[in-house]
Amino acid sequence: MSVLECNGLCKRFGRTEALDRVSFSVEPGRIVGLLGPNGSGKTTLIKLANGLLTPSEGTVTVCGRAPGKESRAAVSYLPERTAIPTWMSTAQLLEFYRDFYPDFRMDAAREMLDHLDIRPGQRIKQMSKGTREKVQLIMVMSRAAQLYLLDEPIGGVDPATRDYILSTIIGNYNPEAAVVISTHLIADVEKVLDEVLFLNRGQLVLQSGVDQIREEKGMSVDALFREVFKC
Amino acid sequence: MLMKLVKHEFRATGRVMGLLFLVLLAAAVGANFSIQVLNGSSLSLLRILGALVMSAYVMAVIGVCFVCFFLMLQRFYRNLLGDEGYVMFTLPVSVHQHVWSKLMVTAVWYLATGAAVMLSFLILGYRAGLVRDILQGLAQIFRGITAYYALNGTAIVLELLILAFLGCVAFALQFYASMAVGHSFSAHKIVWSVVFFFVFQFASQLVGALLILLLDETPVHQLLLSLNFRLEGMAGIHIGIGLMAVVFAVYGAVFYAVTVYFLKNRLNLE
Amino acid sequence: MRWQFSNDAPIYSQLIEQIKVGIVSGMFAPGERLPSVRDLATEAGVNPNTMQRAMTELERDGLVYSQRTAGRFVTEDRTMIEAAKRELAERHIRTFVAAMLRLGYERKEIAALLKQESAEEEKTDVGFGV
Image 1 (cartoon, rainbow over the protein chains, first blue to last red):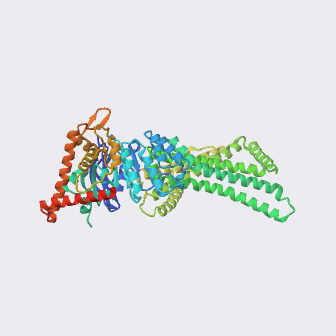
Image 2 (cartoon, rainbow over the protein chains, first blue to last red; image 1 turned 180 degrees about the vertical axis):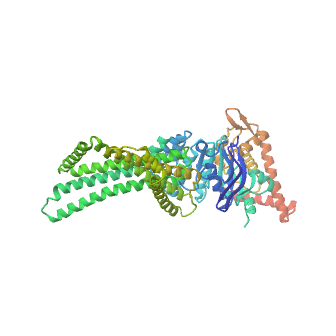
Image 3 (cartoon, rainbow over the protein chains, first blue to last red; image 1 turned 90 degrees about the vertical axis):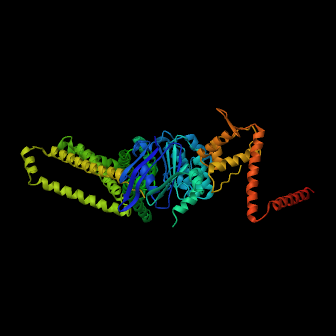
């Protein structure tokens, strides 16, 4: 069964068509890049899969279920902004995730936090922006979910942090789960991906394997992207 | 899951509320001291100081009530409709559970604030004879009421307290609903929230006015008359309060439904 | 191991190439147990499925073999490693020669230049030795 499936998915905001008849599916074990310029509908798509928005038309399902209380137990979501409650200490945040997600791997989370020298008593509020982002990523990747939806995980971070984020994603790879990474920084994530989805103005213009593109076109996905989205 | 939400909600609000209660009680102790010592002083400076402490206490009482009310609204706004909403609305819990957890914690803090204010009164009057006087006065009032109306006096006071509490909760729900509706817009979310608060206010007044019209010189009114209730004074007051409680409950339920509908179907986080 | 990738070839074939270099150069010794696919993928910063694919190809070539529970090992067959080394060398030479021809050198001139180059290298090596 597909982990994520969209069928004729449309989302309109007033008169603007944020997503226009998007259909695709993501199989378990795949790491998929959701690529497109700013405003192409990447975040809208991820929000729809999380049930943070409701479709105007068409369907989106996670493990065969429409977004809701049950599907959310299977999804681990990294929003594009830092959304972890800032009043909490790291220890409280760990407890929060453990309370709500039975699949939360406490040991894995502790180990990753230790690795970054983040103390349990430290409040999120007192952390730098970069550290907060890392803590949020650790919470998201510490879950043994079936689908990881990562919205712009490497947008606006320094190269060292970017490497840390990407290696954390690879290090937590699970052949039973799928990962969807939305980004416009393709050169950085290309090597990590199995396949890519190109979104342009709300429409799905390409779904293909990374090595397939390199083999058939003799160019990187990044180069192809620049060609497709030439201004 | 609901209890887990409630647990973390208490954790989020506990520190501020605890601090608030401490400040209130400290102010009460200060005011007590000022009544007992400073006011009787021959130094005018100390007397002025005493008056200042007293007014600080009054401010603290008013402040605690306001801060409690607004803190509960701010929690709803920040936790569900701000950035944290991305984490909260992707938890495997239902929207009903979210709203109930907020409502339950809000209700508990309202009650606790009421209790803290009462306690601060007691501290204020301690040993200055005020407590005794107040208690005696109250007892006298109750005795008087009881003598006059049988047990009903105490019951009415209790009923009125419950009514006030219900009113606060229903009012909070009206705020929730306006924020939920206001934040379903793509822009100017706060402005829309304020607008909808007044729209709801207007709508509920309109409905109230219509109900009064309905009861006056209409078939409904005739029907009620024909039933020919015979209520003695006290029973009438009880039923009146009961009716008011039902009105508040319906009022709250309507806004609860609006809140849940908008959070479920029209959520539009920034 | 330093992993580097170019933009014009599939990633899995570049992985095969670089692991081969690792084996030929002795970085992965004959009979040595290789790190897990996940660890190698993390180290190289590539997709674990792509790393898996590269490993499967290397297994098919015989340079690597897997034992059901113990993991993957470099072959102990030194002639096979030699052959792989030779193949890599030939490929490098072909690209080098092609580049030189494009510059307008003749094959003889290329050989002469190479000889001259290695003589100079030796001289500097001796110099450093003293």
